[in-house]
Image 1 (cartoon, rainbow, N blue to C red):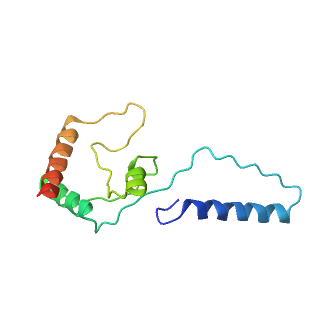
Image 2: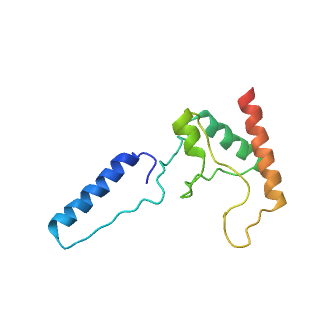
Image 3: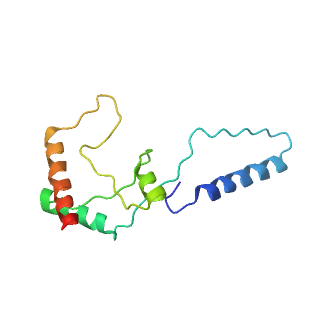
Length: 124
């Protein structure tokens, strides 16, 4: 689900499509089980936290910022949706939750540089 989509509207759209299929084929049997339901979350790049993080990455790591969305289930949505707190997810390493998962110490140190720079910027 895309961040701009509403979870209730998405479920309604899916159910409407399934009901239409069942009307078209009376022998069609469909059972829907929801195993996990959670709204997605994204933050515009124009928000101060994003601007600060991008600046910190450029300053501390001397490289351009790469933006992407994770398909994973992370706690970011609770801060944004339940409390209205703008938040980004940033950390060391690349792929997570894979066989032989590890993070290089140098990546951890780079992350500390970036996050401490963000903190100093936001606290000024």
